[in-house]
Length: 151
Image (cartoon, rainbow, N blue to C red; front, side, top):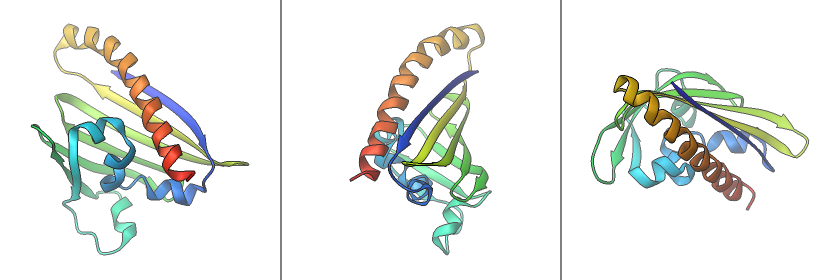
């Protein structure tokens, strides 16, 4: 299992940050999704904007090249925390948790990525390399999110 955890302070309210955490907004700022997905479309019913954040909500990522990506929200506390699982992309398992904390300047946003790779020992070795790349990508993603929200 590979864990990547990065935090950043953003001069925006938790509500504004929360709006960017909808699954269909991820390709706007998350480097991994931006590079690999054309878009994300909900496969569960969305009648109101809040439905995008409900536990059990599902979505499908439309790839730019190949592969399948499916998302399912497993935990959601409005303006505080959202967790989703992703299947696809060659991972055995991938869970993303976003935590929002109100601070003096706006919001402390913590991004946690837990990845389980296939391939046994080879996967563990690859995980060490992936962690370094993933941490750099996470920093770029958080920087882009901050830039979008602080305009």
